[in-house]
Length: 212
Image (tube, rainbow, N blue to C red; front, side, top):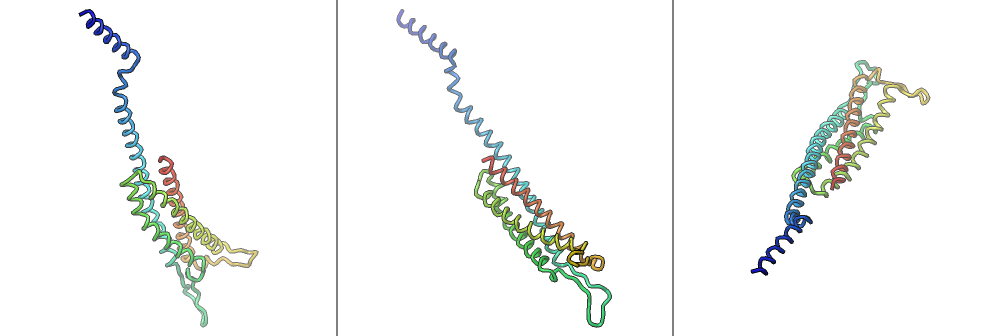
């Protein structure tokens, strides 16, 4: 009887020591760590899903601005109401190779953005995937280079059309072809808006990839 009582006392004292040393709470620590990790992953997933939704909205907006730029430039043209026996004064986008390049470039941008929308939807449905975001940031960078070159070159032509260049004896003709210059200027502005949206898309993709 004395031995059994002594063993009970020793077991009770050892359990008290374990509680004091903090060994008993260790039994619940793995589940707590797992639950905290799940919560952290859920928050990260919601954050990335929010970025993907914003990405999709911006892509749709970029499609609209790129279509506006392409259609605006492609339909730019004006014929003056006066003419001579041998000449008729008219201006069109196809008179300048730079404007033709702008229309083709914007058409390529529209096609790419439409094709990239399914990848953006995949990023919303599966926010933790890396491959679609990586593809988007690579192709977005290439497309923004094309868009910037087309918009920049066309902006230079529009500037010359408005102001001319006295050193090169290039005369401004927007005083005569006002509607044509207004339409081409609007198309160039829409092109630069597309550039800004594409740059924001690249930044968003980089942020989403960084959080991986």
